Image 1 (cartoon, rainbow, N blue to C red):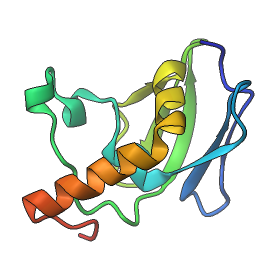
Image 2 (image 1 turned 60 degrees about the vertical axis):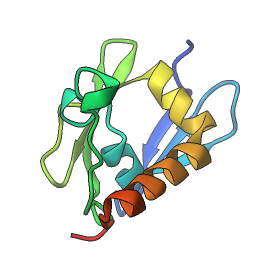
Image 3 (image 1 turned 180 degrees about the horizontal axis):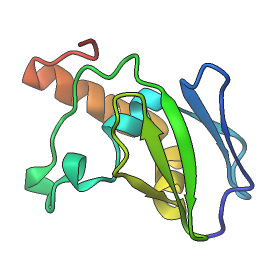
Image 4 (image 1 turned 90 degrees about the vertical axis):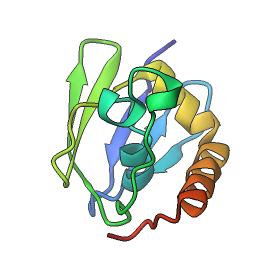
Length: 117
């Protein structure tokens, strides 16, 4: 997987634009990146352990730190910082953005949870 040509966080820190060589620019909200974080805290150590994270509508990206040549660590305004977003995972999120987001919204509804705190 080639790295993105560009990662850009918006001035209000609510959106990260990702530009891969094979895709046009894709905007991923901080909320989406936070709730779909690849961290063990969110994903668990198996699919059965994955949790649905509510209440992150207003979360922002406070920092983006490179991790070698293969990933970026995002630090969020709620202090979550354990997710390392590999280029492969970011590409998946970019190409499956609508389906992943709808899946998250469906999970919230099924579990009686809210995007608000």
